[in-house]
Image 1 (cartoon, rainbow, N blue to C red):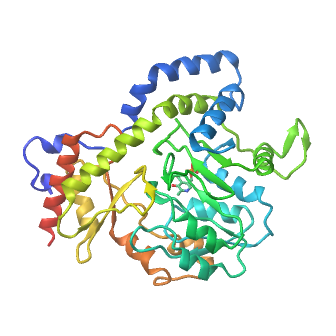
Image 2: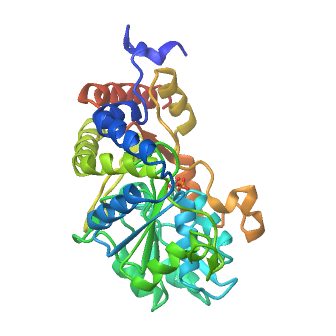
Image 3: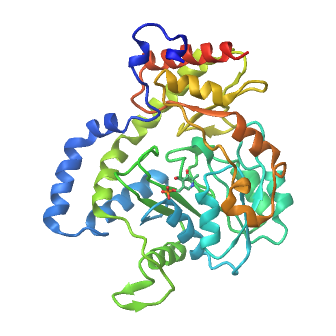
Length: 380
Ligand SMILES: Cc1ncc(COP(=O)(O)O)c(C=O)c1O
């Protein structure tokens, strides 16, 4: 494809989907000093760095409690287990999410009940959620791509059942000025997230003292005191080295999220009006944190050809996610098939995530827009 019509020199300058090295350069001095502290202390699991991060992230997220976990999938499972829901109970979650949301439900001994998304924003649709609720015991909306699902209507739809928020992609996002709405939320600090560790980490957020206590206990072998196991637990705790990274990055997160918003606005201007492209929309009342800037290609265009053209030009675009949960072989037993969730299936065919991170430059975005426009035009 020889650069797909890219002008001389352009193909050499890649535009990565995320730029973790640029983020590291900002925090490097603090991280190295923190690592030295932890290495000298010999305390690698939990400890004062983790407690400090939990305090700071709780304040940032506007929650009474933040409990560190090994990763975001575990954090979701711990949140669900803390609720002590009836075994095998149904949990309503979107078909268009990362597979971890469904995994956590199954691992918590519960049953995933999938629902389709609202076609405009691809967030959980309260009407569809209410229709699917039946005998379900909880609702699990996902704050996809960096904006909150419509929490007011979803809480109403839940009709008193606990709402657990998958906030893996929405660190710092607000809706009508608030960050959280449900009984309990879980987030992921996977390296590419808005707040990313240098390995796996996650956390549970809640205002409820008892739930926070249950999460902390469950993730630490169910033990408050060593070798006295009150709850059936597991091992999912935050490492001190990850907490060092997260504390340093958390100080920059408001500025980084603002930079993401500015970059998203720049894409809106650069890409607005391009034929064959639908831009992502912010739902009413939302302050988006743009974990991903996911455009839609089509209809009548070949998303994968556009993706290939971007890759050929060194542009790190991605697809989140190419296969919805119900069509994953691992979830075949849920009994769905192609056509079960048409909005999620169409999104899987059309979505394309463009590079978006706090260190993206205007020149890089202009280059992405140029290559994307050519790729769309070439495949009319
Ligand atoms: C929506 C969603 N839920 C859950 C997770 C799971 O987080 P982790 O990868 O930290 O286990 C992720 C991220 O990977 C995610 O994007």
